[in-house]
Every structure is written in C-alpha cells, then in structure tokens.
Length: 119
Image (cartoon, rainbow, N blue to C red; front, side, top):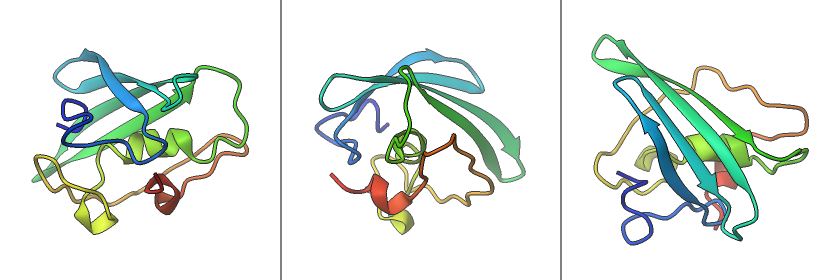
C-alpha cells in the first residue's frame, strides 16, 4: 500500500526516495528504491513466512554502488515499508505492529529507526 500510495498517500521520510516493485510472488517481494536526488538505486528483497496468527518477514537491502557510512539507508529502505504508528510511522492501509528480532548491517552502516523518520 505504501509503494502504491506514493507520493500522495505516503512518502519515504528517509530523503524522499521512491520505491517500485520489480517482482512479486506468493511469498516474495522485490523492489527498487531510487534516492530522492535520483542518483542512487538500491535493491530490496522481502520474504514472508507464516507464523501462527502472524508472519515472519525477512528482508535485505543492498546499495548498487560501493557504500560506506550509508546513514542507515539500507536499514531504512526495509523498515519504512513495514513500520506502524507505534514506531512513529503513518499507516496507509493497515497499522502494522512488529517486533524486530535481528538486524545486521555491513561495516559502517547504521540501523536507527529515528534516523529513518527524518525528512
């Protein structure tokens, strides 16, 4: 809903990038994100797995250029697509709740939800 709602119903608060769906299947979603200045593209992949009454989401975001000190961009690429009002995000169609179990990043990359919410 967030990707389809750009830019009128939702915008990416992390430097106003734009997302586009590259591929979608029953349990996978691949996207590309173009930075707000139009200079850089990141590739994103989500995999979904049923887990009782909810689901588990596995995600990966990768810059398509050499990147150190990415200011959390790859983390934010993922997090901004599933965060809910409890996280400080604006719901579009559903107000999602989530528990982050594990997040790893490459050398020099940060992972801070607060940095993701700065326009």
